[in-house]
Length: 113
Length: 115
Image (cartoon, rainbow over all chains, first blue to last red; front, side, top):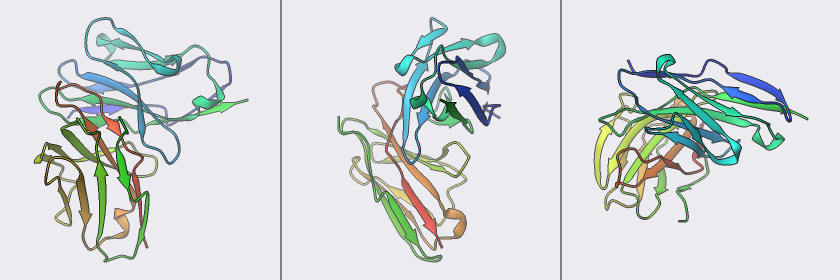
């Protein structure tokens, strides 16, 4: 069955440190891939997306993600984390041939001052 | 672009009561989705509309749940005979129909608490 796995439930980093959030998908073909961020009590905001082409995609707020087909991964990175980045991050997959988006369980990011 | 609007933001109801939520998508978007999110989980797909047609419905959506989008604009999600297990955040999202891979635009959700 198609699935999205985010192995890290919680991550804590110091402000200014680099960040990598992991995402793995299980799907036969290359899906469309997304990262969303959710602040408490809010809806989800799109950070970036990958459809095809260059495997390194840039998003908003200084985030980037790299698609690695061999590892079925789409990890999110940021070189220097700001306190305002504290939130929950969700990886999502759009299944080809449908309009159904599948979300991972999320990674909650805590930023230490 | 005024964004996706959901009302109410919060709803507290007693077990057994019916509740209805409303979602107003971005005006030019013809796809509308409902998701449910419980604490510590990602959004779970409930149902999806293309214009007024409900094209897919999750097995999570029991007979007590019904969604409509009568004129292809706003949508309502009704839960009948609510149970405590229905307590969750209900998220609405929309996307344009121009491309099959358009990202979802989410509203801020309706938080349901069933006592």
